[in-house]
Image (tube, rainbow, N blue to C red; front, side, top):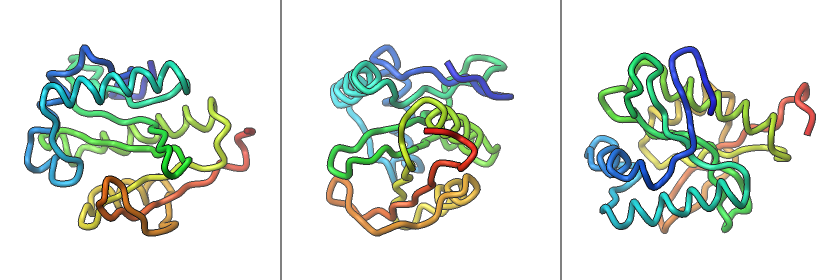
Length: 167
């Protein structure tokens, strides 16, 4: 569990299936991250649980400390095709504009550099997702390359390990 001023982050799991499907059902959200059927969400969440077990990191549920409401997901996703770990964030649209994405992503980033032996993390941003570009830039990420994920173009942003954080 990671705690910030306003948020609690905990590993996502299959018990989050309904909230996960609901998050991705919103057209404003799924424009960049896609939708999930109940079965697809169960498969994705099972893979997330497996990554936590096998790699010691993964995606987290983001909950408001004030009331426990599930408002999105953030965390560290290993992509085998890139051999890189991505910092990602997806929030319910009704919680955009409050700084939650940056707060959650910063907490995951700090945790990642403190606990993982990574020289850098990436952030994969689809064309047109200006809100995620702003979050990435606020966190200190800069564009590294253009690539493809699931046959769709992405800009790969990267942030190197801070010099004051040992590997």
